[in-house]
Length: 417
Length: 193
Image (cartoon, rainbow over all chains, first blue to last red; front, side, top):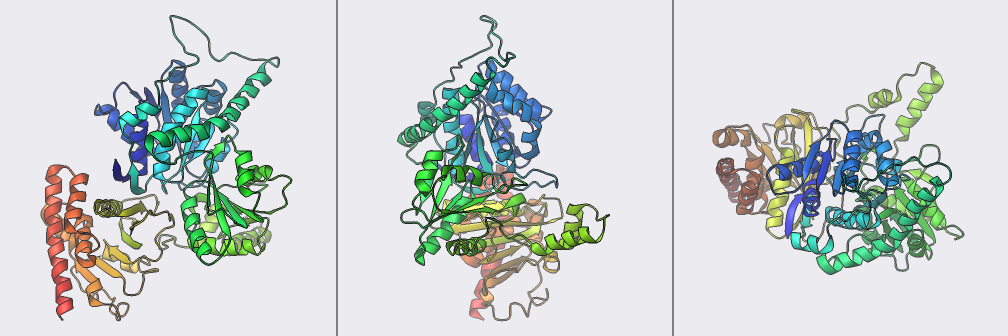
């Protein structure tokens, strides 16, 4: 049924339709509305057979999810930013133990400096944790990916993180086609665990593993993600049969035919990029888009196939690996190894910096002329950067960077963009 | 695509207004996207919310930097925030005030504007009368419907009913109807003048 609703509420409804049995939550912006809404539905009785557990920290949230999942319950939690970092050890444990927990990550920057706004730093910090990571472009896709995530994770017995841009998606009201309970039930069978803590048939989960077997356990986790590369497109196709729409999959291309310049990105910024690409196509520019939905596992083959005919690739990412540059770029470039094409990394939108059509038009035109640097920081305010660098040259006691920059910047409340 | 920017202060229901506007447009079969300015909202701090309305899917995720219409929920912002930033020439402006544009010191800015696109409505007073709370958002939304014709009053009322419990909804609908009438009369007067 079509409805106009907030992204967080839509995701909460979708999760409820998946019949979770344990939800544990600790509030952190911009994820809070999701678990609030789920808490309400447990309390008012619309979500039955589900225990909602308020915990004292994110570390506890993931630990409770691990315990619940090991006991055979379909388990869900959500977090963002420092919350994910705080649960990091348990995040690795969930995947290391092969427990199919589903977690929403309402993508947000990581401090310091503290910042509640959107970028992909949090997701990237856990890219090697063994979790599958799927990125939603719209709230519709966020809804659909959660349903697919439970199916995928439980089949493989691996946890899945559904990443949706904080505020930009979580707090956006837009049209969403909410699935029916019957549709979700037809797609998602009840959870049958591969391993379960049961007093009637005692087992231990979480053995210490020495050098003789550790590599094999790790390899099996990798093998499961390689299996996921095959299953993700199949599950998206099955999803389409029941729900009638394309959602999920490994990657999506847009206006890619004959494109000399291909732009690669993840998440909600793809919408803005597509608008720019349509306008540039209308002006005769040969430009297209590759959206990556599955970041882990990373679809090397699909990415290579989508990009190999282009002359240049612009990888626009909301994350920065300090000391090297791009993170998504590193993976995309690996997919392109041996191919002779220009590759440009663009770091954009960190800490919620708006990524505007205007800036993208300029950027893509520069790329077309191969006038971009290897790594570009979109809309970076060089005045402020240079002022601070000069300050540090002038005096040893230059003071805290963030505070200096805020002072240089002046009042920000008066700005709109 | 029609883009609206709503300025107000934390606690005035600015974000709710944008969401309800999107719900009203959705109810009329249109695509709509509402979102806040993503600030850490505090009571009294300047807050911005946006709403886009179109006949096809809205993919754009940038803030509304060149609005077709402005709704200003708190006239004290006029001297604090660059509320007019990027406003299209001749765009709609609706301000929560009992004063005129000239009295607000905006006479020069709107000199060439079509008069029917410049409206004011004492939304806080109307809200206090009907809802007993200084929440100007709903009357302004109804005023915007009257000024722009972009959405119908009935759709605004439906959005109100979806948002609020029965008793509060009825009071808000009464406030909406009064604000709608006031702005409709204002527009009529300017067109006949």
